[in-house]
Length: 136
Image (cartoon, rainbow, N blue to C red; front, side, top):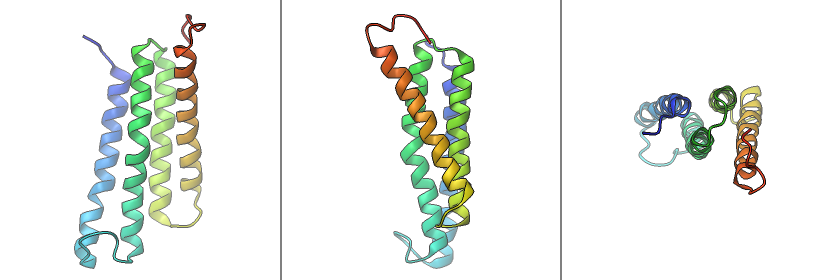
């Protein structure tokens, strides 16, 4: 049996975040009487984008985290990268919930998300190369 405690933790936390973001949408739809799309309502559009952006970024990050864990990367690295990914997603969702414009949360949320994805992509590419027979 493969045991992936770090990836499991961040997958569970990521799922809770996505559920929380999704749960904000139906009440707004009811309040504004909008069945599909945002009906031009900015609060609904922002809630939809906050959820959509999490759905667009979290799965790839969690997949890469799991692949790194399977390959035996140090748990300290995994917790750091997973924490960076989750913090980025939380910041982005918070920032996007405040405004469609520039916010601290949106900017730093994307920076941390992309940084975690770039780090994991680099590690996975390195591990896939024949010359990288040593682990990180």
